[in-house]
Image 1 (cartoon, one colour):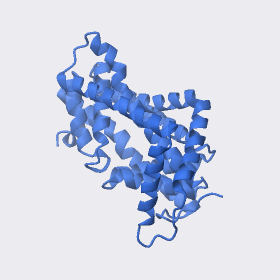
Image 2 (image 1 turned 90 degrees about the horizontal axis):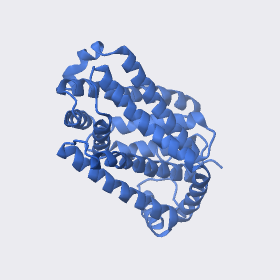
Image 3 (image 1 turned 90 degrees about the vertical axis):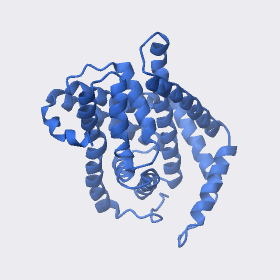
Length: 311
């Protein structure tokens, strides 16, 4: 409630810092789009941009939106002329790389913590949990990229689930073999362009974090960057739990509280959280709606099971 009641105070923030925050968030989205395009090995910019923005909007407005958003992205990529197997493999790889980059953030702050940086117990625990999460995600990704057993099992479960959907017009066949072949292509492609992928995921997360710093500076606060990074990382992990669409309400409460633990004044933390969520949550929803109109005019409405794979 405190965050929502702070809306009028946005008009008193520094316009320069708010403009920098908006630019940083646009660059962050551009990095995410370029990374997905790299993983999909496609030149279809419009399709990738539309799928990412519309999928993000669906994720942020529907209950259990992560599943629905991923499904919309897959359907739009296939409708836009991208091979269905390539779409599935690219989206999965983008998710794993994104999670690994997210959980890497506490590792970056670890030297400062060990060097004596004063950290509240809550943020310190979040840092250690993030480090543990990073190890698990990297191990999970390594298993998927280097072995066939886990990927085959996941593909079989997915195939059975898809084929059990009532009134489904098509039957999914040979999904394990197709995903393994696509995984090998993604692995080969990343092997050649891994530096570019690292820069893009770093840019996506880094500019998003910089947008939060800009929001804090717009309030007149002088944030401690490493502590704010821990608050940012912990909030991003909390947002992964699909309790509300896009973490609405939960992210606002968690981020403002964690920023206070990071040494930011309560008033500045609340106003900065509101400004940050305006450009990272609400504006992308509006953009996703506009892009969907353009996509629908070109390819038709998005319907589950109606996408046509590219030949």
